[in-house]
Length: 242
Image (tube, rainbow, N blue to C red; front, side, top):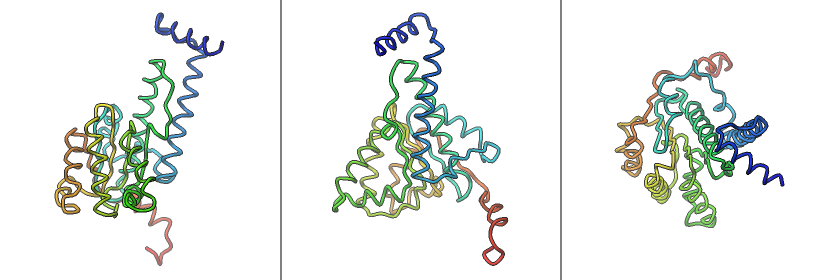
């Protein structure tokens, strides 16, 4: 009967445009729990600090906020270390996820498994796993590759520090190729210390095609300036380590 009641409420919403207050509160609670699961995934993959969003410290707040309105395709944030790329990318990711979740709820759909809907990985971890595709852990690497291909939002942090084998590069290129072919329904977020003009020669051009496709959507943000970690380091480090 409870399930029938929910169906009736959703039908009433579609007919009248009104949502019962109790259902609104329940939807809000479910979405917040869902977003908390995504924050946990980010915390596990990239650490706690990148979840602390301070818009006053963002080097290009207008562009970052605009990316939260993106629908499919690629978002590339690049620039020197310490300029806020990862924090800005996480903010974009959570903004997109919040918007997508609201759209699903308005359509009467349940929220999907957050671990498959959004995948967050550091580039070194991803390439290390992809390097194992032909070893004893090959099955796990295959599963990870499939998760990356299917995720509604994929965030790969810090390309340029990844290491890994040439086979891992080929596997990564295949992930990006699959996502490019479905980019209307896939969003790929990438951060890198590499600047746009450095991609062509990086790793003998192994990632040039992927980078060219990231730039195709014209959503490349270059965060410039000195490291924002400098002030904290000067304040917190003992004199002998400065």
